[in-house]
Length: 577
Image (cartoon, rainbow, N blue to C red):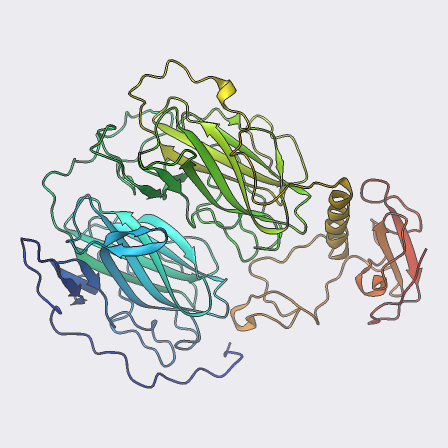
């Protein structure tokens, strides 16, 4: 369908013409690493930096998307033709709709959220970060970039580094750090998608996919990949870990903060040795909830699944988990350390109906979960930070779990509550042995501590919880229990991006809540209290839930209250019981 608004004006100047040769040749040895500009490589069908350097920049070779209006991408689709070529979507217009405009790989790391170039060559076993310049539609909340790495561009085996949602609309820049594996010709792929889930090649008409091949300096001292695991381990260990783990657990020194990569064998994000482990955007969202599909859902080590009800940042979700040493210091996480789990969550309404459990397991390949302290209540609504602390037991590959739930149900044998608004996420951490020899770590060490608090005071009120429960139940009753699906075209509300078949409905839409006995009779399920003035607009017509005055409905003694004389389309009239 044609866009709802006229296409944006074309850029005032055409994209920069692709260079015919590398910007600056790099020396093959010595300390003179310099930035490299990519040129189009017809054998791969993508931009490539043929020389080693401190960085590799796609320049203008990726600017635009497919054959998008006013923004044709040079040499589209710029995805590796050794394997399966991935075609771009051609809908929309340049710098109004989604596009990847530039990719740069740089030797260095991200420190305190800031990319810091090292100035050295991009080298096997070192650190590097990828910078992606994007154009995000509207607020950016519906657009996500999946960033992948392969250590061999001639035989690509894509490993997901992260999935990052646009931080805003229009021109945006995202950055992701990674460990450089062994391999001379490596490649980054960015899969930029409108909604959907993580993929190396999504098929949406507004999606863009671009690769950049960069040349890596060989490190002759790099330890080769570990020997493949036995054929029947409890959980197979991948032969290619997105974040390679050192073979010597007592390495030369601390490894610094670590960013998790998704481990397909374990089914959850995993970090190598380091002083902290951060899931970044790998847990953001929940299940297949509207506008917040979680990458690699459900991100749990066992049979726990997420609920799919509600909408992103309107209902409950775990968005991030970080594990850090509570005592500070710069050494890697080690058996016997006191650590803190910090979960960034989204709590519904006032938060008083949402609770969270924290767990740890000493063996991520065969997890036996131990709860850390008591169940906690969200300190407020919206974005909240909640923490728990425990002592790391013996074990080289451990895991932590957060289980956010609406209400309060038993976690069961799998240690997770799996209601339609509940989210469970795990994070796997690598732990060094304690050379001081830990005779035993008592379970008593796992108890609430001074670090075991939340951001803000927890003030739980039974009255607030009951009000939250009632509000959510009435909302489901008044909408027939039908939540908007991701593919909803948004036409009911007249708001959102209808040309793409999505968007939230707003004022102007309506939804049938049952088979009407009378168009003028409305019921509402609540405790005995004055009726809202909007009952005609918000109440339910007679159905199986409320078909007569005084009928029991819902929970906690609620009954059906009745009002008649609601004309069709009336906004309601005030009535009290």
